[in-house]
Length: 134
Image (cartoon, rainbow, N blue to C red; front, top):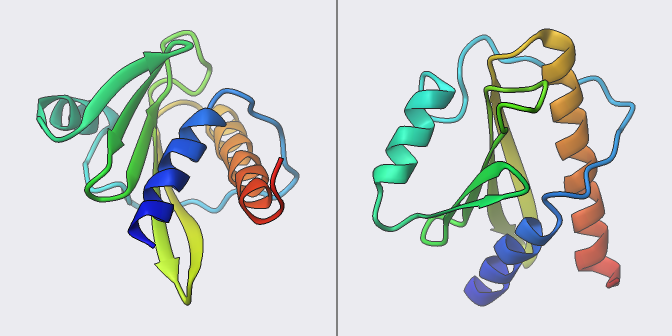
């Protein structure tokens, strides 16, 4: 099962740039749920961690934490949602793989809502691919 979760992390990364829109309104948290107070703090901490692989894909900074089954996506300055961080954690329950997502977006509410909808749709498509294949 551990290998399956690592495969899911790679699978999530392969979908990171084909974003689409969803109709569900995102729910807001009163404070950061990503484990850091700001997007900048999260990015600096992840870049300093030797165990985390950081790459740039289509302008987005992607931090892959294989050990914790976590994939981070940081929006580029050219994106309306900048600065934002999307943290997705692969969890296994009852022999099923789930993706838990937390977002910290410091841009305007409409840009942040759009970002969340895009990643929700991305996660849904990824889950369908995992269940039914390409």
